[in-house]
Length: 116
Length: 113
Image 1 (cartoon, chains in turn green, cyan):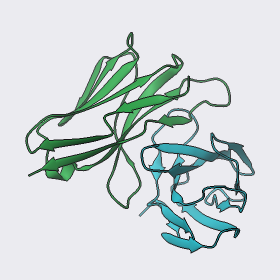
Image 2 (cartoon, rainbow over the protein chains, first blue to last red; image 1 turned 60 degrees about the vertical axis):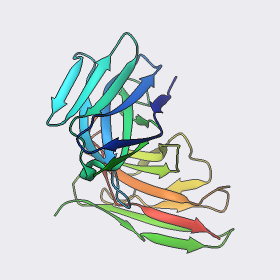
Image 3 (cartoon, rainbow over the protein chains, first blue to last red; image 1 turned 135 degrees about the horizontal axis):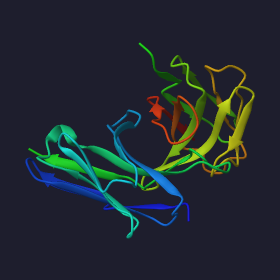
């Protein structure tokens, strides 16, 4: 129930293409869904986040789509650039209550490579 | 500049030795976390602390220990009881508990020979 399943494990996209990474969760208590971006040798950094009261959130070339009924959310990177090459993690956190409040559960990660 | 400093960046140890990884933050954040990163397994929570002198086990706490004597510091000890300690360890902090942005350090890579 605490798992977040992420796919694909790796993704290769040509420059200018669309990168799509998917995540699925089981725990309906989750109500905060961030995406983190990690470059080699660095720690992850927050990219974009969504709460389940909206179905989509866009920030520049990055969009989160959220499907509450299917318990799925995805990251779309439009006009992918070589500088977007990184590992991307989805995550989920539950709402208030209990000792697990605020703990982020991460997906397995997707290694994105954007070819020039 | 505010941030999280982890040291050392690389560490090699022999089997059976305890190792302590340092994590210091100057963001004045209340909560601090330790995650372990292994290829294909994402980030797994080892321990977290919401206030000074208090901490809770995460999902994979066995073989690890922590302390939180100061707000700025949250060191992690990898003990000899940890069966597979070779990994990339990440420290993070957040302004409070609840679903908030985590700020990560640059990590410490531990290799046990």
